[in-house]
Image 1 (tube, rainbow, N blue to C red):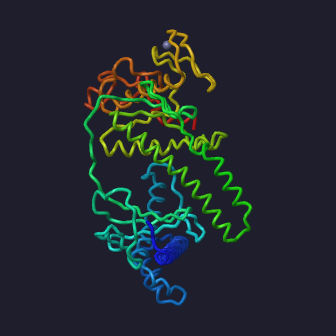
Image 2 (cartoon, protein in one colour; image 1 turned 180 degrees about the vertical axis):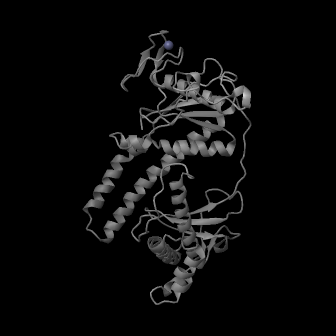
Length: 419
Ligand SMILES: [Zn+2]
């Protein structure tokens, strides 16, 4: 978005008011929880921190901005709480969500939202925002449907973005029979089970010189000066450029993979753990989490399958030809020869093939189909074929994964001993 100077001022005012309303509502909810563990309904909150607050001297300026943006702010707080409670109860997957935090004037990313009542798209392509006016927009793409809300973001490098929530129908592509296993790494970005290699673009490493110069310039400026603010924006812009280039590249790679394969299998990497080691910078630069997220999102949209195989699957220790466990190998070993069948392996390609095999086996298991020969690699839990499980015939249920003699064994992804 390219707001005028006047519109920037109105936006700054609205960011501020939305933030104050959010913080006031958060204070009230925290206090209520402390006194009697109660939850104030959204309507009551809104009346108190918007309608009633406007009538006081301390908050009279809330009347100068769009009510819709203020109400959206309270709804966002509600969502933040819901995410927190769902995360606590286990209803929400993923890493734990913390309690909502207070917003600050100094946060380097400012945002606000308008519901359907607070914005309109003009025939000339401008975006009309309540109490702000018609803002010039450079559209990155046409909206596929009527949006239900818009979020306005001011990023640390001083750019304004409008991001719309739109409901879309899945757009399934014609089915293929190609499947691929991917081994992600740092020396090469990805090695596919069919032998294709994607080089690591190392966007951050390449821009490091420029970033360092900008950072040095910033450190020389006097605190609180205008020049310092300018230099800070310059650093932020340099970082934004790296992030934008990386995201663009990731979009292209993942779109290509989704187009060409019906199923894609990846290893579940411990990205947060690796990011604490001395590889941290390179790991962040690789953007594996974004790679995986984009693949998963696009798979859902285009009717493809993305399978994540367990973190402790010994994909680099097993021979993909004869399935014999060859033992652990240090990272420095790039090629090795299988002691059992004599095949010589490229470390990453062998891993990618094992990932494909493990992913296939997982998928067939999940579909209830038989596990074909030659696809399994040694693992803790081997599937039992229909009819051999104690309950299979009697109850008519699908056989469940079990160890020898029906003794329950750990399933994929729930390895307790290593956690
Ligand atoms: Zn072998």
